[in-house]
Image (cartoon, rainbow, N blue to C red; front, top):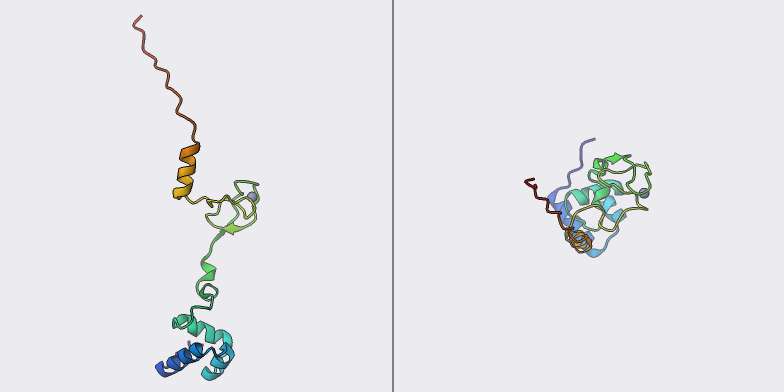
Length: 122
Ligand SMILES: [Zn+2]
């Protein structure tokens, strides 16, 4: 099925309808398409910012893995690169950032004095 390409006039009219607060149903009837197709068009043409574009663009790109959770060892599938399950995920989400850096800096133990060993020339 070829993608529906609204004319500039139609896009302009859709933009007006959006501004006027018309429903998606009304707009879909104007274009002669179903609502889902209308939403795709609005997202593709950048006319709507209220539609969650993620549903229509590349949602399938998210890769999952079953690496055991670093907290509870759960192997329930999670989006790749998440090392903790939802229950165990730490606040910093495993992503290094400034706040976690400062926390680790302030809580690190004081440096232990290195024993100075000198080879005794004995
Ligand atoms: Zn867990």
